[in-house]
Length: 291
Image (cartoon, rainbow, N blue to C red; front, side):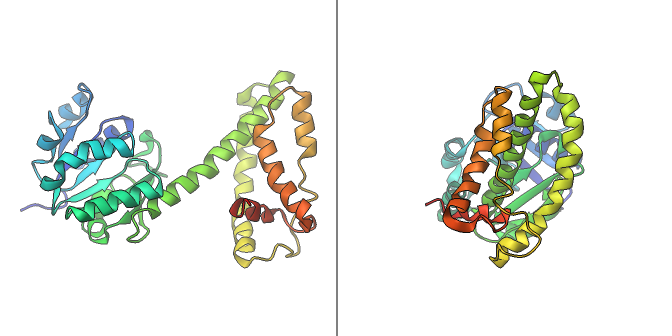
């Protein structure tokens, strides 16, 4: 009898993330078959009990869900298109990074071939897989999510966002947008103090607790945005939030202003439209309505 603890699983793609995903499956006792376009990536997995396949067709032969973690949308089609007939009636869990539109296109492609498709976004780096803080976002086939939930949770907290295959990707990329803008702000600050002889590691020691504390403001901003009233008392006004001094200091230090100037443009757009007395959260309107 096949159980959730010995279900055969195929992993297509053994980059750093694919290898981490496969490693957790092997460690949990799943009969794991792996394939990678470039040979030589499966050694440690095979030593742990995985089976290395020479082709994708060979890799999916044992049955069970097929986990896909490849470079991009084109590579997913390149690998899966020739297997469409063999995958009919099977579950495919695609953890390749896509745009929402690409995820929906793959969902439609899968449906046309009788494939149960679950799209996923990984909110973790490879070293975090299966450990604290790892989270994976899913959308698409609810039956696949429910049937294989125990397997999916080997990698991290699993959250399902409905049958629209593009939703997991949308959440994934939106969260990454926040992360990258935050990292850019940190690196801008590190660049500002560098000419004064301040090491980035010393700046990070101050920045990390400060930025962590500031994330406590997310919920308040969210409530204001959802309420649509940017005049709620207690907010920092757009006029007060003007970043002219930060830009001037950066210029004095000889650093590029791209990261901060982007935020300043969002602020000025609302001030110029007559909303200077309203709260900083109003830059949401600059982003949502770029025209």
